[in-house]
Amino acid sequence: MANELHHPLIQHHLTGLRDKSTPPHLFREHIRRLTLLLAYEATRSLPLSSTEIETPLKKTQGEKLSCRIGLVPILRAGLGMSAAVQDLIPESEVWHLGFYRDESTHQPVEYYRKFSAAPPDIAFVLDPMLATGGSASESIQIVKTWGVGKISLLSIIAAPEGISKVEANHPDVEIFTCSIDDHLNENAYIVPGLGDAGDRIFNTF
Figure 1 (cartoon, rainbow, N blue to C red):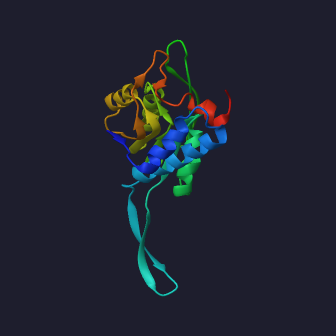
Figure 2 (cartoon, helix red, strand yellow):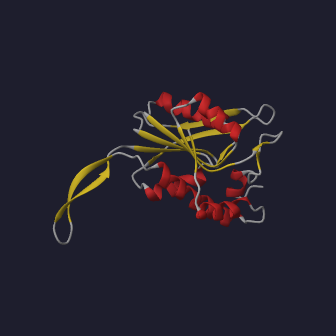
Figure 3 (cartoon, helix red, strand yellow):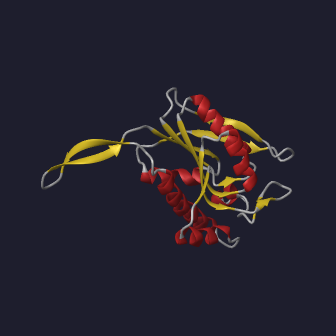
């Protein structure tokens, strides 16, 4: 299921993100702020457990997260999102998957994987752009094979084609996105999109 978020702050930061004149340092800030808003929505159902604490005045009951949470940024652009989620969940673990796109077939090719022996309980796969859905679907399958029970995908911008592919392959995975754009062009880029997120994040045009 795809959840497209609607909020004035999202629209504001998306505009800055899409603008081709936005310099890399401001582009990264827009990515960070949009990721925070996405993560806020995506973490609504995290499990909690009760705990007793003592305030300066008295003992009282509180609640704490009760599960291991893993972040799986898809290299390299996903790295632009992971720090923002870590700010919200400092205890989260960050594991990595690397893919590059074969420009002739537009298919993802895995080149890096760093996972632990024991999987977390919940994983958030992070990729700013959900275009064809190839690398996202492959990543989700790898995370499932790892043994993670609950997975969500966070993407700043998504194409309908990518959403359809992920939903067909992984109907149990929730997708959170700030915008569902129009379509993919002949080069499998999202339109209107924002160009290449990795290049704009890391200033490698």
